[in-house]
Amino acid sequence: MKILAIGSHADDIELGCGGTLAMAIEKGHQVKCLYTSDSVFTNKEGVVERDRDCVVRELKDAMDCLGVTDYEELNFPSKDVPYDSELVSAIDRVVGEYQPDIVMTHWVWDTHQSHRHTAEATISACRNLDSILMYEPFPPSGRSYMPFRPQMYFPINIDKKIAAIKAHKSQLEKYGNDWFESIEGRARMRGYEMKEKYGECFEVVRFKNNL
Image (cartoon, rainbow, N blue to C red; front, side):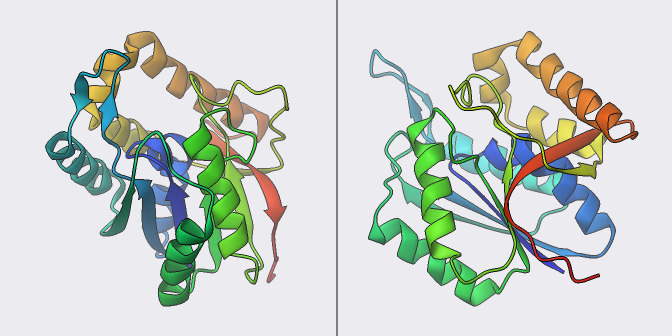
């Protein structure tokens, strides 16, 4: 099986479905990660807190932790990933080349505009695919007036997920230790809901079961 995970920024996929991807790789499935932005972060004062060199280094380390060898960046502006024909066409190109069986992307009601636009463009680009899942958003994004609906669960490799997130040192410095601890806490909660130790959940756009 071929899985394509799509996120806006380096660390989004790791947060949303990194444990599921690591488990899938362990079981012999193919995984590709696609990031729609350059992941550079500039604060409100105009100071660059995460430059391209940092992004490239941290992303490679995170992918190594998950076991992902195939990943790509589209380099749209980090805060302004558009929902337009250019992004849809870019995702469509990757989908056409990779031919995934399952696509995983952001939740379409995410409160971060780049996350939301990436999800919308993914759904448009994957209009002919049978299986699209939206991974659970994580604060500070995702605090929407619409509720996330956990509909599909997967047991995960928590060690590889945690290692991948730790690889993004700039994000850990930005959000702090409480943020990091809450990641493991949510994975434990989702695992408890499915009678596993750790898990991740998804909202289903559509899913074709071949069993």
